[in-house]
Length: 279
View: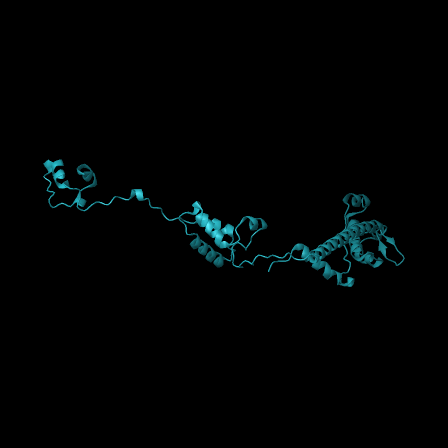
């Protein structure tokens, strides 16, 4: 079974999210804020290191909670002198509910929220466009009937049918038997048994979970070992047992000093180079 495409998974995800209530996706607070180093140093130039530590701690607490309180000042700055606590306290403003906030930090939060809202809107518009395009494409495809093919259905075990393309379907033969027959007539594969190699390739594909495609079989043939060819021109000519008439007399005459007695000698026992001289 083939895996679903990416576009199909996106459509399914949109369908699922459309059925999920909004309360299951609470708005997540941004975990960090932009820290402008030069502005911080300029705004805390008259603070001591101890006052700066309290100040940045209260800023982080405000970003996490949304505000700070007088109790936070008293508890976090309990070891500091009152003038130092008052200096840090001047960086925060009261609201109607008795909460304290740093206005510059809230401005950073508003800008960050506006940016996230714009990205969310752009994402929803893009998802709506993709949903519309997928639904339109699916409707058009279902409205058209499938083309009828009058040709007989090919065998599912056919090498040609596994992994074939439209281009090869036009240029290639319609059956494996015809294609294998053409390969057997190809001079490039002379000396090879195409049906035997085809059976070997199918067995290898079955053992290795591979598809027996035509391209794979052509590569298989190109790597197959061909049997050693024998050349009839190098076969020695058969030597007659009796030999030509009068060969014994000619042998004794050719080598008179060697006292060769050719009476009990067979013609096949004579060396080839000597047979050429007495032929």
